[in-house]
Every structure is written in structure tokens, then in C-alpha cells.
Image (cartoon, rainbow, N blue to C red):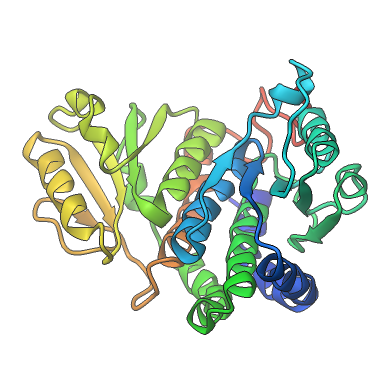
Length: 340
């Protein structure tokens, strides 16, 4: 059965191509400015899927540029009314709609506190661009399904653009330009049978480094579209308590990559299998007793998790339909969440 969510998710590769073409000059100017005057602090502010994009962006900025990144709670400004002293800081406000009141208040507070406020926003007709010193369009195009897909991937691409232009790293720029084709290829991979076999009980989604934000986004999508309880953990953090829940048949989806985290992650995934968990793994090295999900081969470790997310997005609408649910219009959710 066709869904807006599936159609929009399939447009992610085209959205990233459009963003590179239409917003590349803006990112280049921002990168030049940040090299000339490096910020004293880098912070992000977002909700939901956009915040998961920020988690991915935090990893990219910290590992590429060596700049610590903090996530700011929007309620500091919108509910508690606390002014923030942010002289010389860079605040990245990420939003598909650009209309959530708490994000708008944080943008105002940060700018009043001396921060350079940059918005990554999909809807340029929204109030957010007017509150930012610089608003860069995500260029994802209209997104009608309540569950965000292409706008989330476009926000992750925006962080890659930011880091590539700020660092001047040609390898990272090449990864950015390889991303649209990787997303197109990933959209054609069929994860639906393996995900359906996990059943409808609670499950973990594990990821580390560039994959942790993607794990959080997958867990959210299971909740939003399928009413399935899913919790995301760092592949390291799961050993600090949550692993006690793993028993025979307990479903776990893990995102792995062949980088510096591979060895430690392998030990954790083998532990999950030894405890009887039903483990699905995307990427990384083979894990005995686990089911390997199809992935696009040969991708750099920073963009491989984004391709995995694209494959996941393609599968989730059919899972929701199979449960008698409409993935485009969850009964308790709205496209624009106006939190304070």
C-alpha cells in the first residue's frame, strides 16, 4: 500500500542533491566566517527527529573539528524565561516546520545573549528564519506525512555540509557528494521482512558514534508509526544496566561500522546473542548468530548510518499498515508540535 511517508522518504536523495546545489554557497560563507572567528561554544537546539539530526551533527563536528557541542533545552527560554549569556557562541537551531514556540524563544534568547544563531529550516515562510542571523534551507521540499523522513536526513546532510565547509576537508566534502546516491541505493533495499519478524514487543536500537543519533531516530519511528516501544542506547551504554532486559528472543537492532568503535561494539553484540537476544545488524563485521541486514557496500563510516536509516524508513510504512495503522497520520500526533 502506498503512503506519503514512503514517497517522501524515497525523495531524500533528491533533497540532499538540491540542498548541495541551493545552499552550498551559504554553507561556504558560513564556513569561512567560522574559520576566521571560531566560536567559543557550539550548541544545538531542536526537538524530535531534528534533535536526532543534531546528535549526528554533534558527532561530526566534534570528530572533524574538535569542537565540543552541547544540546540546549528550549524550555530554558520558553518556560523558565532565563536569559542566556552566549557571547561568541554558535547556536544551530534545526526545525522542519520552523514554528515550534519553544525553539523560537530559544533563538531569540541566544541571539540576545550574543550568539551567532543559524537556522537549518525546511519551511522558509515560517517565523524561525526571521529570528536567525542566517537561515539555511534544508531544501527537502514539502513534507506532509506526520513522521518526518526526508527532512531529518536533509538536516543530517546539513551538518555534513557545515563541517565540510568549516574544516575545508576534501574527504568530507567527497562523502557529502556521495550521500545522495547512497540514499537512492539504500531506498531499494528491503528490510521489511526482517523487521516484521521482530514482532511487536519492546526492543532496543543500538548505535555508536555517527550511528547513535540514527538509532534514536529509528526508535522514535517505531513509536510514532507502529506503536511499538523501542529504546535507543549507545552500544557502550547498553551494558550499564539495560542489557539486563535481554532474554531469549528479545529483539535488538544494531547499527555497526568498521571504525575505531568496531572492536568494542563487536563484544557487546556477541553478548546480546549469548544472552539469547534476536539480533539484527546493519553494517560492520559479521556477528555469529545474528541476522545481517542488507546495506549499501563500501560507504564511508559517517554516511553509512544515514543510508541504513533510509532503508529503515522504506520499511516502516508497510509494517504500520500490517498492524492496521496509518503511518502518515498517527492518531495522537500532529505535523507541527507547538511545545513550550
